Amino acid sequence: MSRFRFAFNPIWLQAAIAFLLLGGAASAQQYDLLIKGGHVIDPGNEIDDVMDVAVSGDKIARVAKDIPSDQAKKTIDATGLYVTPGLIDLHAHVFGYSGWLWPDDTHLLTGTTTVVDCGGAGWRTFETFKETVVDRSKTRVLSFINVVGAGMVGTESDIDDMEHEKLAAKIKEYPGLIVGIKCAHYGRKDYYNLEQAAKAGNLAGVPMIVDNSILTSNDRDTETKLLKYFRPGDIHTHMFNDRHLEIVNRFTGKIQPYMYEARKKGRLFDVGHGSGSFVWPAAHKAMEQKFYPDTISTDLHNSSIFTTKADMPNVMSKMLALGMPLQEVIFRSTARPAQVISKYPEIGTIGEGKEADIAVLELEKGIFGFGDSWKKKKLTEQRLRAILTVRAGKLVFDEKGLGFPEWDTAGEYERIP
Image (cartoon, rainbow, N blue to C red; front, top):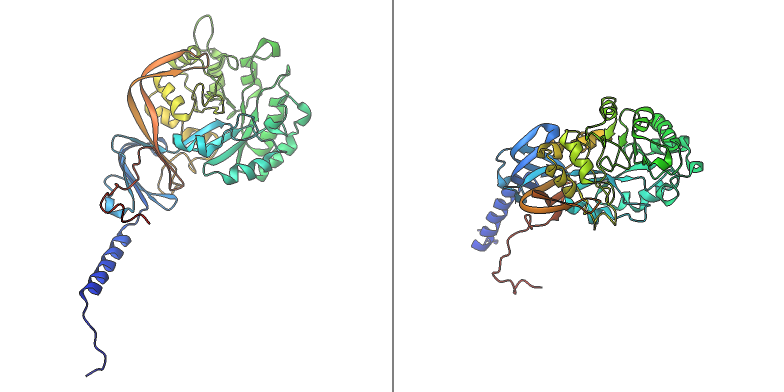
């Protein structure tokens, strides 16, 4: 008989069985996150139905009906909520301008996973912008680089700081990060800034985004600006501020014929709400005639965040109030802006294999008041509200604690270290 005996111990056996069972369960949990039962609106993939969305690592792993919960390490019940691609804000200020805001503090909690800084950096200040904001943000931060070398740190009417070849070279140095050129706040009586931006854009293959005014003091008008100086794919922001575009004839209330011509020739129009660039009369007349914005954006800065409260759900809610269908609102906040900056389908979709940027939104019912730049209020019966944000597979905002485990009170004090 052997000198060594194995002493049977039921506690060891139970531990071994538990280890095997847990190992089997872990192997079955092929997803890190599962968002179940939400109404998925993904215009790029033509999905508009109650579906489940599974995430593995930083990628969308599967979008389908009735994915079993036991296949995921964490399951979130999104019943009654809308699940969309992460929102894309084409006009934000996160650098350079004195009113800039840190994107992680202001955008992630609104379902917005991508922001495009609109003109804060120029070719001479871009490296500082990249090091201090782009590389340090959880939010995906892209750039419409300013036509002025110093960006908004400088003077945007400074024609001596507009060098289109150096601007184009900087854009080529960061393809995909610099997605276009910003022209704004130009006080001279000409279109020189647009000419320089177009030259650089032609060399680098990117559009420009513009917010030059049409005040009589600067001798500029909407028709000349759009049809002579804009190229196909160029964007005019602040479309519902009649100091920048005369969309509607002030005497007849009808859309100006040159606006239809501009759109036919590929000129694009962006909301760019801000604190001073959205007025109900202009928006109402345009939307009533189905002259919708191509893209929905905020022009969010440290004034608009407190006055008009123009974050993405706020501006999207205003589009709903003006008669735009929900599916169109989502399209113009996700897939369409991604297309405009040549980033689709890299972003703007929750297609399988794409980076997992997801917004979960609630369409609340009630009576809500929304203000414009003239401090005029419009009452509506519904509004969109961000409930949860996933950025690159990570749950970064969860207003209602949908992803939190239930609090177990049993032995709570004994577990305090």
